[in-house]
Length: 236
Image 1: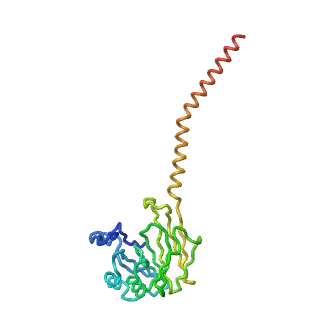
Image 2: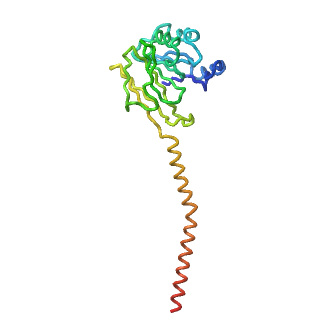
Image 3: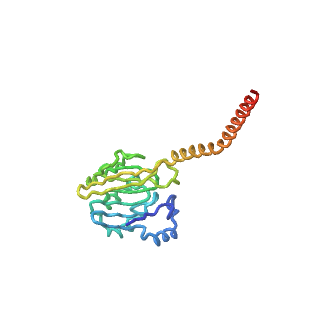
């Protein structure tokens, strides 16, 4: 099953007050509610549309409460899906958001680049762990430790976003060990591939352009050599 979350290119929200009601309604017509809770076995997915200028307490608490029935998520894996970053915001936003919803994983986009951050509930500090590169080929995340919340920015899979490294995020959930395993499947780097294609194209074009010249020169040489040989032979 796929869960589609709205971004600034879908409903607005990149700038203050630029969300459009008709865009939000169009999104709902195609992909369902903008805020929704999905449950499957030991996993809860909470889909949100909290942009950079909205507060949790003043704007989103009641709407989210309708979907969560005003309770914290209780499953082993409590995953929030949101296009914009959440834990890097002010304490006024993060503290009630974290305490009431109780997530242990946040998946987001927006920056088009891979980053992994943690938020410490006890100190309200957010720390960047990794950027652009996964520390291990497969990185384990202990989501059983209630003290920390992980926020993962999934890289873009489109060459049009203007970033060097693109790929697909893969998150494996192990209910027996209460561990998530993260890896990124990187695709070929765009500029390197383009340079190789350009060099290959220039080489082929050069061969096609020079081949007739080289052939003509070779024929002229053979003609001159043959003529001189005949002249030398007939003189004798």
